[in-house]
Length: 136
Image (tube, helix red, strand yellow):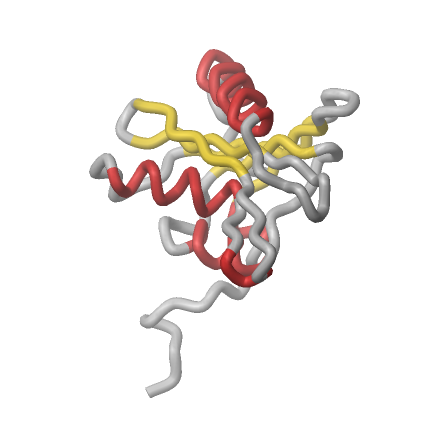
C-alpha cells in the first residue's frame, strides 16, 4: 500500500497540476497534462510541451522534476499528475521519477471526472534501472 500524501499537500499539488495543465502546449495531440511535485516543502509544477520534432517535446512530469531540481531539490516527496483521464506516466518519465526513489507516492488524477488513483513508483516501475543494479 502506497504511503498516502497528506491531504493538505495533496490538494495543493492537485491544484498546481491543474493550473500547469492549462498552460500545456499540445497542438498535435490535444492531450494536456499537468504535474506537480512536493520537494523541499515546496510545490514545483510542469506541463507537457509538444514539438513538431516529436522527441524534442517534454512531458509534464519531467518538467516538474526539472523545476524542483533547478531549485535545489535532491529528493522528491510526492507527485501528482493531472490529465484528461487518470493516466500513468510514460516509461521515460517513470524512470526519471524513479531516480529519486522507489517509494515516492504518486496520485494520478482525471481532469474529466476527478477520479484519483493512489500508487507509488515501486508499483509503477518495479524493476527500475539504477547504476547499483546495472551489470558490470
